[in-house]
Length: 220
Image 1 (tube, one colour):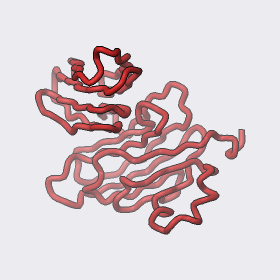
Image 2 (cartoon, rainbow, N blue to C red):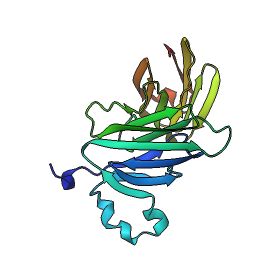
Image 3 (cartoon, rainbow, N blue to C red):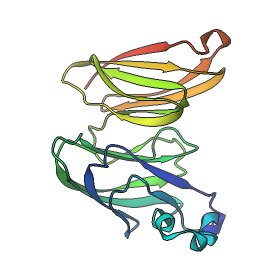
Image 4 (tube, rainbow, N blue to C red):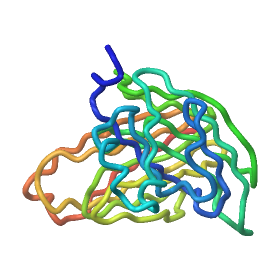
């Protein structure tokens, strides 16, 4: 297989990283510095590459063509810009895949990590930059909201999203609230050090526009 044969791939940056100065490199190429939350990362010969020269500079700077089939290396350096910022987290997500291809989180105000992730990984398991990572990732739905140990977290509406989970020692209780506006299949994914679950919900007609609640208990 040659690079030109690779199915087009576009990854997006998610996570709590806006309040940090971030240096991001993939496959040895520096592709982001400062705020990386708006980056779009494509494979080396993505069809968009032929059109990028016609785009304004502000858009060209937000697109990088560096991904390879199989294993890719990633390097992150981060430093908090503002006091009381949320813990740092970083994820690479694809439009067509649940869960993220790569996820890293840290309670520190600065740090670095170097690791790997995979394009077209057959089991679609996330590659983690740290073993104690914990998150929920949902695809697009009308309303999605999580509560961990009675602490409400960020809600999403009309889009998919990533929610970082801060766990306590011993049992943790996660409540997942969601509302679907139409019938069909809806998916979300939970990852903690001791609990991994891909949840596929089949929304029936009598569930449309009604809040559903799933509850999970697991240890850190």
